[in-house]
Image (cartoon, rainbow, N blue to C red):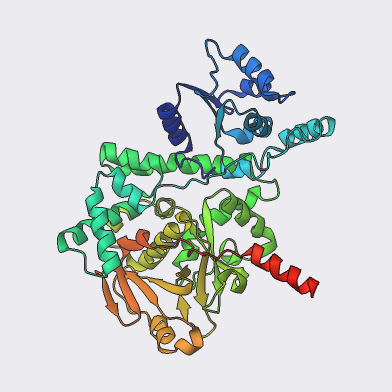
Length: 453
């Protein structure tokens, strides 16, 4: 599952074609008549019989046939059938769906029909718990963007080595990587705009691709959103650039519309988040773990889940400004959103530190069991809050800070500085926890002796 247009259909078709002799592809939006094959009995043999009547010339060979159920949110009956396909065991099934459909949004008339079916046949449209391996897919991150542009793995490995050893990146590679990062910021990680750029080298064509994608997202806002939220979702979405343009980037409802209130717009924000279009970064005024326990649910920033969406929303000419380095007062917001993009694609929850005194750190992450602040600068600006935190370790419990900006690798005490293009190298994998096994036999034997005594 994943945001629309992130490449789900392409990747599963590519995988299936490489590993199976027969691929049966069903798209429940383009081929709604296929839904009928799943209505009623969920016996796999019955489903296969129904499909063979609809699809001429296809044969289903156990072990060599893969079914792809695309846009499965349009056919809950097909999703329920996954349990029975798994129990049957003869065929592999890959299902894809947008986050919206998977998480239960949809046309009210369809929901009513499904509720009627559910009343007649309890459990017929239930989610097959334990029968799915769920993978969330994201647009390309910066490393994948480098692959798409044909950059050698040797270059990426050189960056990794410099990162591990905290040694400056060679000048030629450093300059080239800054150029690639500017390209990534202007194009983003959605596959279609990237492919358009690789074919045409034309940013106007990239913009056309984004306009088409944004239209599809806005169509979803009408198709899937609850009626009470439909009038407000676009207002929330369209307000993101001006929310990030403020010195205080906290999301404010009255910036969506004068007099705006949380009870009006909270559902709309949740919809956008469930759609995978935005990600929220929650405030905490404590630099400690666990961050989730210290986060304030009602104080947050909102970023686009892919940097390309924000750049398109900023309007014509912004891509040229980015490539030429003329970002004006908005450069901080763009590079903050780039960091949010990176962390989101690493499947991280987002947090930032801010106190009423004005102290602020852009992001907080967990690295090797510690809370590590991340500061993000478009250029080389000094961060006063970083100095304050590092100068008072007993108060803030911070041992290390990483600052990203327009410079090479360097270290000043507990402050590690990295170029912005190295954000993707952050290792945010949970630390391994290996426990010694308990000698159960010894415990049992000891208990037996005690009882005898």
